[in-house]
Amino acid sequence: MNRRVTPWPLVGPATLMFFGLVVVPLTLTVILSFHGYNHTTGIENRFTLTHYQAILSDSYFLGIFWRTLRIAALTTVICAAIGVPEAYVLARMRDPWRSVFLLVIIGPLLVSVVVRAFGWSMLLGSTGLVNQAFMAVGLPTTRLLYTETAIVIALVHVMLPFMVIPVWTSLQKLDPAVEAAALTLGASPFTTLRRIVLPQVTMGMLSGSLIVFGLSASAFAIPGLLGGRRLKMAATLVYDEYMHELNWPLGATIAILVLVANLVIMLAYNHAVEARMRRTMG
Amino acid sequence: MAFLALRSLSKVFGDFAAVRDVDLGVEKGEFVSLLGPSGCGKTTTLQMIAGLAEPTAGTILLDGRDITNEKPNKRGLGIVFQSYALFPHMSVAENVAFGLEMRGVNRAEREARVKAMLQLVRLSEMAERYPRQLSGGQRQRVAIARALVIAPPVLLLDEPLSNLDAKLREEMQFELSRIQRSTGTTTIMVTHDQSEALSISDRVVVMEAGRMTQIDAPFHLYENPANAFISSFVGKMNRLEGQMRGGAAVIAGITLPCAPAGLSEGTAATFTIRPEKIALCAAGQGLIDGTITSRFFLGNTWLMQVETLAGSLAVSLPNQGEEPPRPGSPVALDWPASALRVEEGG
Ligand SMILES: Nc1ncnc2c1ncn2[C@@H]1O[C@H](COP(=O)(O)OP(=O)(O)OP(=O)(O)O)[C@@H](O)[C@H]1O
Ligand SMILES: [Mg+2]
Image (cartoon, rainbow over all chains, first blue to last red; front, side):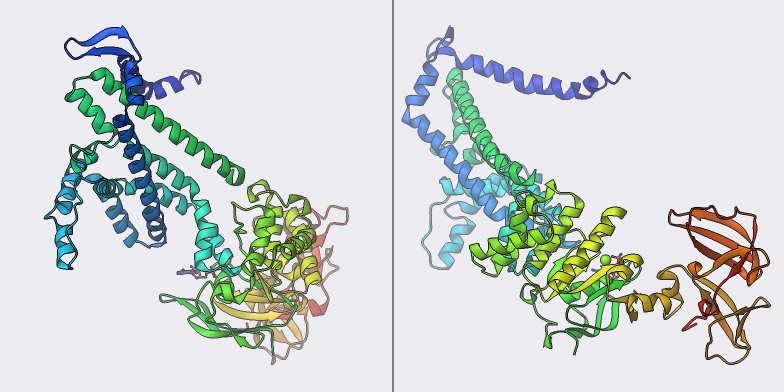
């Protein structure tokens, strides 16, 4: 086959899929967000910016956006704090333990998010295992379910593999002699970890953080099931606008705003970290 | 007493002894090479000295102090790893400064010492570069500078030149011994390249299957290999089976002059002779006649294979600007009696 022609059939399926499943629906959503809406007549075929104005000036919506951002950021930070040491320990393990624990870490991915969310709601409920344990040691029962804490706990559980795997991959590329070199130069094991190992896995942490943040900010099932009706996040809000209020243009506007905010945050973060990395690691 | 001493040092992996009962004393300021084939335990020995591998048995003494169980970050030895193991996220200057920083040396002194060290390894212009922006030889010099700047009592080098091309390697050998002499650092270098070991060391330690079988100055080692393995591992060697009769070697019925040996009449022995000690002359004018079967041009020398009644002998001739006879030509071989020797330990 002609060398110039070959790439097209190869990228064809992916392009088609991207176009059909991402570009077209996204464009339709953008168009929809500029449509008018009337409670009695439904969607009106006229161009308007009222939805954008309404959302950006309404503290109810802004509060939900802010909560979404806060929960996603907190989940990302906790995932990094747990996932990076976990990946390090995993990288230091030998077979067969490594394979066993790798399976344990990616295990949650094999269970449906809905099932896991229900599992957490059983654990965190007012008579759940966690509160029973609190009572057993004499602590007062705490309301956990339908709080931000519950959402963060469950999100961390779901997102951890997305942090561990990229960090673990970048740890695999590390030359063990580099750590040994730091030790022989007088660095303590902890200093070696902080000054030598961590800076070299920044790239893995960056990609892990982006995945975790993006997925958390758009999480639907977990805030839906563990946040309850009151504690909404962006995705559950969009769902409600579409399915309960039937105000599709408003739902579309929220979706677009969340997408834009997400993109801006992730690109800025990526840019900041990558610029620093390129200078040193190449 | 030796500055660095290994006493009956052993390392066993499972049921495999990588290093067996090794004894070695290294004097202050000495340059010692560990030479041996792949898998003989050189790296393992070095790692035990550095504290990166725990000995199964034996002790390591540094300046009379037992350091066998001391952590690597407390030993303060300088190590250059085979892969250089530079910190990829730090500049050359930061790499070199790391050890001083860990020792709590203040910034001003640190900068001065790093500068002086980079000057010594001739990398002053590269101070702000990152390892990935350096050539192999430059990286290696950074690794050496990083190990030397902490003024270690002992410098350990694990095949430091094995990744370099022949020319750079020779330059670096020269550089390494220049730096070692100017700092006077006690140095142990692992290598499997015999010419490298011979050219820059004060003494060479030959290792075979976890044991140290000969420890000698390079010239003495080359001239008096302790056993058959060493004689063929260090340089090339012709080996001929025969007997000792009347102070001469009798090989395949041919009597040839040889160096005196304390062997009784008629004892079977293996005789050895280095290819470069044999001279080629016109047929009938040497000690033994033969026919050239092959010849290889190596630039500075010609390596010939000559078939004689006593067996096939390798002969190495310096290239003096004239082509030697072609394969098939009849020739004769000559050597001084002292060149043909009875093999030790054979
Ligand atoms: N961690 C280990 N577990 C089991 N066997 C090992 C281990 N490390 C080394 N060995 C074995 O010990 C022997 C000596 O290894 P070592 O690395 O010291 O060899 P070496 O002399 O440095 O060889 P080379 O020239 O190839 O680097 C080898 O046979 C090797 O297979
Ligand atoms: Mg080795």
